[in-house]
Image 1 (cartoon, helix red, strand yellow):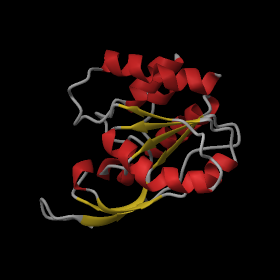
Image 2 (cartoon, helix red, strand yellow; image 1 turned 180 degrees about the vertical axis):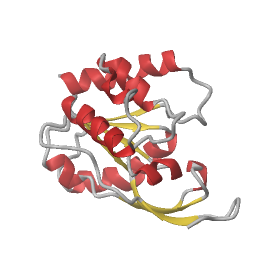
Image 3 (spheres, helix red, strand yellow; image 1 turned 90 degrees about the vertical axis):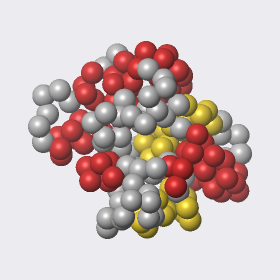
Length: 186
């Protein structure tokens, strides 16, 4: 459903997490952008730097899908990449009211249930991509995880890879995100 500029739209996440029993880290965004929801996969905006950062920190360019023209193939290759490197992907929010892709406009957020995913995997560290994801994780998800017995699960806030976060360049993002690869490979 489209909205007029500045008018929030109620949005459902629309697709599930990427994870398996071998996942060691969980990378959480806030809510998929309209481009990601259209693609039905994480970090789908062509200018989002998430996948180039992942390729660099793991030394594996397969997630860049340079030979892929088919969106389903892109999703398949990026899913395989994440699982091969023990990275689970999801978002903090299951549904919310939002204007476009503006995290600052998020209202009425309903969190995803993270405890079953953590319980069914080897996840030992959560990383959030951006300030809003970190804030919403702390207020909406951490209490539920603690109640489920995961009180000692560390969370690290990382900068957003969104094109809207132009203040940090790709080399700096690669350096900061290196902790994801180190945690996933330990």
